[in-house]
Length: 368
Image 1 (cartoon, rainbow, N blue to C red):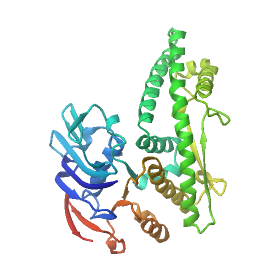
Image 2: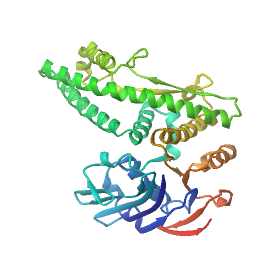
Image 3: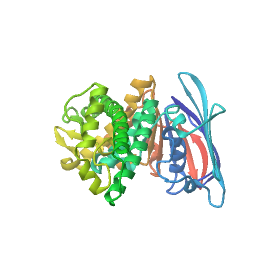
Image 4: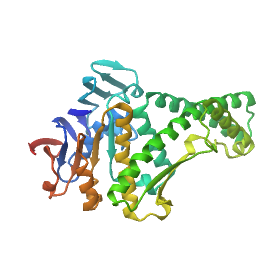
């Protein structure tokens, strides 16, 4: 998959831009707060379905404007494609190849990208929430059905939590309605569990290969899925029944606290280096290596499932890596397209096919 063009109007600090990209390494260079990350953010919206920085679209507006539009042209094994997202007032318009899409869910999986930015170091050292978010975004780009299953799970969870909260206040709650939402949660939890379990197995294979390469065979990485389901269940029906059992066994306690205490929304992925928790006992260097390995592995799993590499977006992370890890990333370009942002003056060490200078939301292409 190759990103060929990104256009934006009234997006962040970009009043208007039209940026073209080449296969291989593309470098966005400039001082801080000039618009490098804004371009990456706009591109990644087409992969994730929403911004990775903003909670609401109004945060994406150029100051004083009423709406924005972003657009990409890309190619994959099926040919040439376009995606467009526009937001004006209350109206949102999404299009693929000129045809309207009903929601962001329909856009996810068309253009696939791996984003690695400084906050992603938290995948290893921070809360389970970040690891769940990583898994949800990565799996969604590979399997469209996962987006539907997770959305339906969240709807069931919200309704169940509403009843539990009401019960915690001493209000009457219909037991049959509560059971119905528990069964609905269990149905979609089983599908989420199976997808995550399978994805983590694939991710571990590639991430371990990266860690071993970077450490000259001295370190290994392993992953395990931490959920409320014990054992190695693989049958969807058995997993569904197990989840329903989990959701009902401590119902009295959940009525007291007013929320669902179990389910995929509370799961975690444990990351081990040489058999030891990277989060609790890994050095800063090991945690950075693990985060980098997971991101590179995300791209490899995407290639395995979809048949081609996604676009890699490295936003201001090369400065966070030591020389050895930086050289490893750049040496692994191969058939990948990578878009890198940097404010380092010594960007000449980065072998780029195209260099784009960024100043005040304007983008000027230079010779690579």
